Length: 490
Image 1 (spheres, one colour):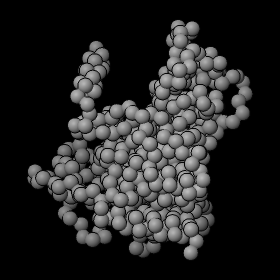
Image 2 (image 1 turned 135 degrees about the vertical axis):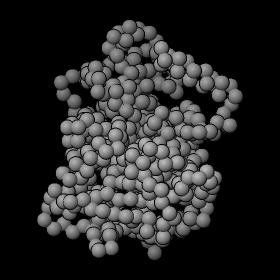
Image 3 (image 1 turned 30 degrees about the horizontal axis):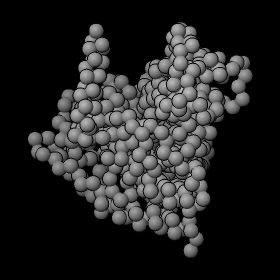
Image 4 (image 1 turned 90 degrees about the vertical axis):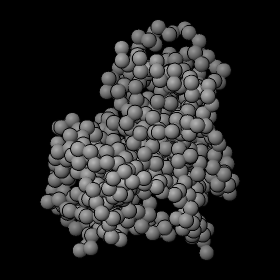
């Protein structure tokens, strides 16, 4: 039996055990609200279709490759947060529902033009109509991960819609939905790329024509579609916020995408410093939102896939030494520094302020390397460090992950971070040094003699329980929040 088969079987066993150790569901305290709600979604898929619905195989490429399927669906899920059916939620299309019979949680309705050359045009119009009908300010695009049949991907998209209370578009690529078929899912995910890229083009048109705003949430292998589409959105700022949750992508390959698709390789027409200052004066770039990468130390799925790929780490492990460069710009190339600045939120660079700070000794990195002064390109190294931290916000959500396998999707955390940059009730976010790597990550790396690539990635943001915060820290945070609120009100 080959090593690859043994690893896949291990993945299967852990996933099986995970079903018995999953975190207990929150008990709903009855307040007269319905125990189940029906949530509407829009979907696009390139799965094959039969009389019984969408299968786990690819669609047949007869005629145009862009003849994908699309429509709307209603998904019935448990009202786990005991939400009442307010007028605003009714306006979103939510309905009270009875407990669904087994395998009847999902009602699917195809759009006119689904499966034809008009699919993308009709789907774009459906998004516009949904925004007009609901009055929504933003629309979420959701990309599911490995081992998700159509119904399972719809379930996760519905849970996201339940959490963010915004329209959600599900892009469902043809995952086989079998734990031992990981290599097939990889292949199908890559096959689906061009179909997803065409959807990205449609979203860009909607943003330009109607001013629509989009956010993206990807989970696990689904993040590959988002990252590989980077060249499609280069400089166009399609998404207001991006959440890459447990991304199953080679960590160093991600760095390559960042370097290539944000500013390209060889630079012409100015030094890196000149390019950096050009970006700083672009209002759209200054106001563009962060890209958050959510990871968990309880994630034991990604260390297993790490074994499948020769010990090279996955992005969602937050454990590759290359990741440390995002927080120590003096150790990496100017090209990548420019790249991270290109997609950062709230660009900290200001030409006038930069002139004002010239000559002042400034720490080189947030970790404090001991080196001071402006860098060789004439920009404050401290500001470059800030740029790195604002470009990619790493969020450790370990305390919210659960099960032997972990690798769960923290819907409420995503919703709260999206809404107000806070983690939610009874939770707090602290800036902390990385806690080190998952022990299975270390084992996988040593097994393939790739230990040099493993490194805790510097400082990151970490979700903690408020009760576990030191009292002094809590008081300081409350004081800072009060000052911010006062300044905002003025």
